[in-house]
Length: 128
Image (tube, rainbow, N blue to C red):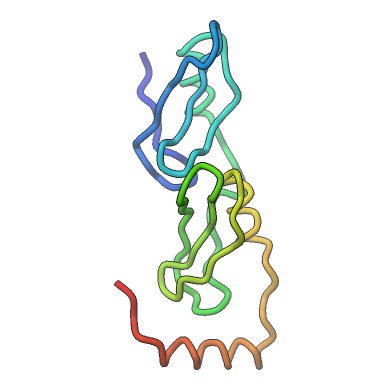
């Protein structure tokens, strides 16, 4: 049996192949809850997960500080993208695909506002 690749959204290796209904095998990331459609066999589901490509899965840098972003979740229905540096976040979504899309298609700030925000961020204490 083929080994499951990590989640394309959060990089987690906590991936579960589950048999929801008779003849329906689904794959789900246990950290960000990314899923695929169900397939008739476990091997079909694993192959589909490993082939998965999404042009939006790479997160753009933060528009405020330029920091790296990541997909996070509090629970299954609260998935969001967040900057690791300044902690800017998107709204909460039901799927990592929507959180990544929201992050990557956000508005950019005009230079005057961006300067103000960067100045404010530079005065804040750093988070670990």
